[in-house]
Image (tube, rainbow, N blue to C red; front, top):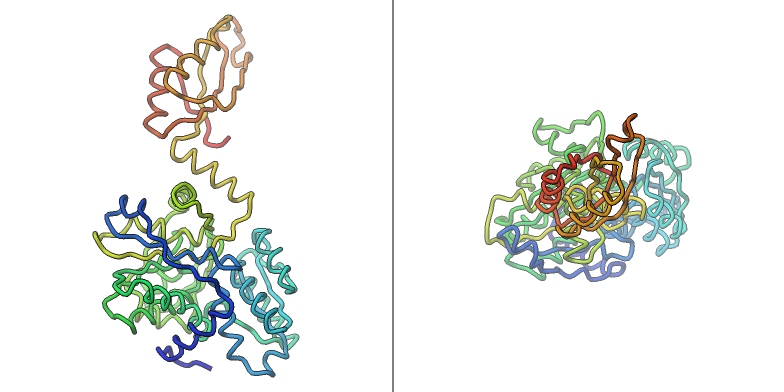
Length: 406
């Protein structure tokens, strides 16, 4: 069992995990380089076979277990990505695995975990509650518990991500790493400082689940009353106590991003890099706008891409609305023939694209006065949206943006 991080163990882990990982070579981002003023590279762990980096720590951890510990069967708790990592690693070793997942875990993560042959137990609303149940089941059945982040061997396996970054970009200046419980951040930061103490490591958390930032600020591990964020993989209320001292020692700064920023980042990645990234993976992309440095070599670690279709659809819709590229406006028309055609012509002249129409003749008791027309439009962005509304207002239609969802 590892009792302290070491460069020797990081090198060992990097070699071992190559048995189960696919190459995730750095992707230079021309788009983010232009928009941030830094040279931005993406480490796309969303392209791993299991859709996330978690297989690294899980596989390395299992490789360090004794035959007796493996024979007992494994159990863990996870919001999804560690679940798949453990399930896949256990399958490769021919070991039975039980995974406890929060009841709200996206279906794609549940089904893929089962597809690797693991037994899945749904329990609790957040990771912390699922973890308590996993510990209970481990004690009851004698399973070997594989912690998703609060374990130095697991974190050492995750540190192989940083080893690969240095192999490709030795002169990296700053590494952005997502933080949930802290295992990835601890492993990446510890290795980075061992290789080059001048490299800046910045942890990124969702604002609604900033357990590590709160703990560092207080100087000891604290538990949040809740963890509410669309970044479900990092919705953790209590960070790891074992890895916490390493976060304090090696992570230079922890910043937070809002869910609305993750939605923006999702659209940026889909449109500019044709990549699907889950909320937790987008943390380091959203954080690029928070950096106060220029002309530096920045690496954003995208931790995973396991997003279900329904969530993806919702985020796309909210993202388009958030950017003013889809909006619904209410206008009041005289109840006379030809009015709809006139409004449509005004919108067409401004290059707006009508997506949906709703005509309400009963908005007023006096039908000879006015009727309401609700128009859902596609625009180029906020400026174009305001231009269309201004033209409608000038023509006397009293436009009002009435809702924020389709």
